[in-house]
Image (cartoon, rainbow, N blue to C red; front, top):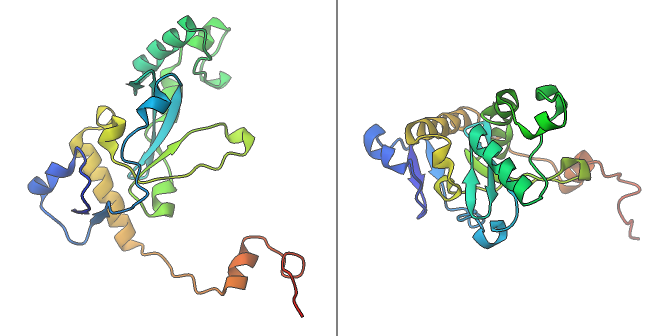
Length: 206
């Protein structure tokens, strides 16, 4: 893998072990890259971030300056939230609720449904590493996916260097084997493909 850009991540040193492959290029020169988590914003608020790495999704919770990234951590976090009389992290009934007290204990089944699951985001965005803040989708939230530096979001606690390097390399290999198809549509055709009506959606000037 060949890494471009000034930003460094925790798995980069493996280039020196596996060698630099000019075919697999990880480009970190995106000016919109989310480099560092906004500590002040996260200080007193519970924030859930989705990290998409190599075609899989992972969740990390941030509260009061700390990160919570595995099941034991999340259950400890719930106890902190209860003490502070704040809303807790909950899960759907199908993952083990029996009564209200059980709702406070998150299960392994739920955690496995939330982490390391396959996602098509990296392929569709053609970016092997992305981050997105997770909000309430029932309110019509459209997530924004941004390239990021994983170590700045404590992702090294989720996946080790070797595993992350291999996941990113594998996704880059997929992108090389599946190049993007150029869109040769006219502007009108692009608008129509997004649901606009040629007669009603445009002004007809004489």
